[in-house]
Structure formats: structure tokens, C-alpha cells
Length: 550
Ligand SMILES: CC(=O)N[C@H]1[C@@H](OP(=O)(O)O)O[C@H](CO)[C@@H](O)[C@@H]1O
Ligand SMILES: [Mg+2]
Image (tube, rainbow, N blue to C red):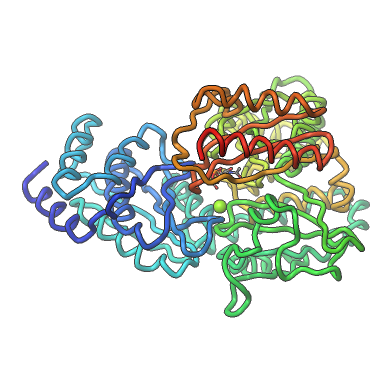
């Protein structure tokens, strides 16, 4: 490292001292903590993204968000050149620089890393980082810290893309690196055009059921997603969408008893919904709009909801794609795969396997699911909480385009031809960079319309096994290590045996625990044949966690 570069780093780092006595770790989707202690982390991640941009000679994304966490938290997500999450190889470096005690240690770590990775800093290479943030009040000053980190690497520039959903920023990074347009309006254009394209491929006679699609009510979690959906809905005339909790002044607090995480974990209607909405199709986004769940309020039930979660969105997508594939193509072998985590409801896994699909499991976190899904021609991944997408391989898209041309000349307008066109429309409608609540919502709506299904009919695809999730505060959540896609506790020893004894007591009992990567808690999941049994199982496992780690 040249002297000039070194002194720029030492000087700027001294303006962002790390918080005392706190260890910051790169978790499930990046860094997350109380916003008041994050400026040094954001500054340092700014440096990391500049190095990553030089290394890959591509644009990198840095998003300031804490997604579903409370409004006083904030965090950082990093988008790699493909639009996916930062490569896992760089996570240890992210961890170590975030915790460097002083500017000298920080420079030492950076120096070691650029040597090891052969990153040509100080050369002619330039670097560009796209910055985005959600609506949290702390976002503005943290964004400034990110800019300072980026500009302390010679030749690196930051481009502020403004207030965005996380998937919008990931999409922009991907598009830029592919050489296509990157503005926010091109994002809205792509998804609204592809939606229209798919709608045009829906058989005429079935559109009589279009009533089913009226009256979608969306809970925007009082975050950035609600605001963006208001814009998107102007471009999709076929849908009537009412946005609540849209983040407007006075409507409520971000993620407080609203949003996809709340609805999915608590299984209750968000604020702003009442008995008057009973039976109507509703959806909920999370704080940075990368998660989507659906629900409806059960009539005369005191606002009880039936949740239609990520597993059911996945099942709806998988079923539709499987159907379109079998119509469009009889002979060519296509690798279609489904990726879930241990949080997937057992009934969804059974349903998908019964459809004849290949189902694989990864640990929690989109970085794992995405990587696995990318191994297929078409890989569909979803977390139960509603984060997921469908990945189409380039190889498959080229094949599909050839197939469409072939069918256009032999049987233009046939069902076969249309099914192939539908698959192509889906590949443009579903965000290829990362799970995206807005793009996912458009695809759900189009498929429901195609099938002529109400949300209740969709929910009947299979019946969820009753489940319960709990959080347990412990002294050190990192004392827990797990194996087998997080289904088995390795440490502390004895804890897994205790859990085994508990779930053996319940028919269809299943339970596992893992340290959260976004909150300072141990998460407990339990599933059993009745709600009471699931609740009891979760409670007794939580007690063991407390006993071993409390
Ligand atoms: C049980 C659960 O929903 N966990 C979520 C949550 O991670 P935790 O590591 O469980 O805190 O946030 C992640 C980021 O949004 C998401 O990928 C993951 O699925
Ligand atoms: Mg999120």
C-alpha cells in the first residue's frame, strides 16, 4: 500500500472509532445492530465494497437497512456483481475489519488482505459503489459514513441511488454490470411490462374470474416497500391494490406490529386491519421489501388470520412452473429444483415432494438458498418467512428462446407455444438478483388470475402443520453450533439429546434451535400435529435452551 493511501485511511478511520466492548459480527445477511453504534462498521464496509469493486472490476452495492428489525436498529447488506449477496469468502474479512480496535490495526488488516487476494489498489483500476438506504431516520448519517469509507480508497466513487427497497438496489447492481439501464423507473418498467406480458398470455375465457384479483390489500410495514408499491401500482392497471401502513407521516412506526416478519411469526393481522377486511386477500411486506407473505382474516374470528407464507408462495410457483414446463416441452430434460430451510413447514415439503419435485435444504439465510438454487436450470427458493425468488440459468433461457422460435414457426399460438412464452415472461417478472416482495407479488397475482383461484383456494393446496416460534435471550448465543442445515445442535453437548426427548413425546413433533444472525437471541422452532402440542413443545425446548445457556 502506498504511503498516500495509508495516510488517507489512517486519517479517515480516526474519525470513525469503533464502539467499545462490543463485538460486531457479519450475520445472516450482513451487519445489524443498534444504529447508534454502527457508523464505524458502515465506514469500514464502505472500504470493503471499494476493494471488492476493484477486485471484480464491477459495480458493488451497499444497502443501509435493518429489514424487519425495530426502527432504532440499522444494518448493512452488500450486493456482489451478480446482484446476489457478498461472496461468503469475504465474510471473515468483513468481520475482522469491523472489529479492528484502531486505525493502525485496520490498515494492517486491509494490507494483509489486499496482498492475499492480489487486489491492485493504487493502480489504474477504478471502483464504483451504488448506495441505497431504507426509510430509517439513522440512514442518512450512516450513508455519509459509507461514503467516507468508499472515498478513502483512491479511485473509488460512491453513487447515491437514494431511498430504495433492498431488491431494487440489488437489481440495479446486476443491471449495471450487465450493461442495461439502472434507473428506478427502468426497474418499475421492467416489472410492470413483464406483468402485462404474462397477463396477455392468460386464456381469455378465464379472465371472467378477474373479480378474484380485485381488492388486494397490502401492509407496507410502514417502510420503504409501501411507498414503492404506490408507484408500481400506477403502472399495473389490471390490479386494484390498496396500500396500508405505507410509511406516510402519522401512519405508524416501521415494523411495529406490522410487516411480514410480525405477521408470519405472530400469526396475527397487522395494525390497520380489522374484522371488516375478513376474507379479503391481503399481503404483507417487510421493512426493506425483500419478504412477502399473504394472509386473510378469518370471518367472525376476532381478527384471527390464515397465513399463506413463503412455503405456499413457493408451492404456487413450483406447481405453475411445473405445469408450464410439461406443456411446453416433452423431451428436453430440465433440471427443476426447490430449495428450503429447516423452517419450512413439514407439510409443504411433503406437498412438493409429492409433486415429484427435487427438494433440498440449506442453512437459514438467502445467501445459502440462492447459491443452491443457482445449480438448477430453474431453481425456486423460499424461506418460510417469504424471502425467495426463482432463478433461471442462462443456459435454460437460451434453450427456451430457441424453443419459442421453433414453436413460432411450427405451431404459432398453440398452448405449447404460449406455455413457453409464459416461462420466459416469468423469468423477466421475477427478480433474478434476489428475493423481491414487489416482483413476487406481481407473479402471485398473475398465477392466481390464471388459475382462477381465491386466496382461500390457494391456501388449500395443503394444510400447514401447526408450528410455533420463540426467541430465548441467552448470555452468549454464539455458544451454540449446529449441523445438518441447522437441524442438529452440536454444542453445547447434551442439548440435542434433551430436544430429542421432547419432540419424541409429540405426534409429528419436530423441533430445532439456532442462534439468530440478525438479533441477539436463540430461535426455537417447533412443529406438531396440534397447535397446543406445538406450543408445548416450543416451550419445553425453550426451557432447555435457558437451562443450558441462560
Ligand atoms: C427464522 C427467520 O425468519 N430467520 C430470518 C432472519 O434470520 P435470523 O438469522 O434467523 O435472525 O433474518 C434473515 C434476514 O432477513 C432471514 O434470511 C432469516 O430467514
Ligand atoms: Mg428484509
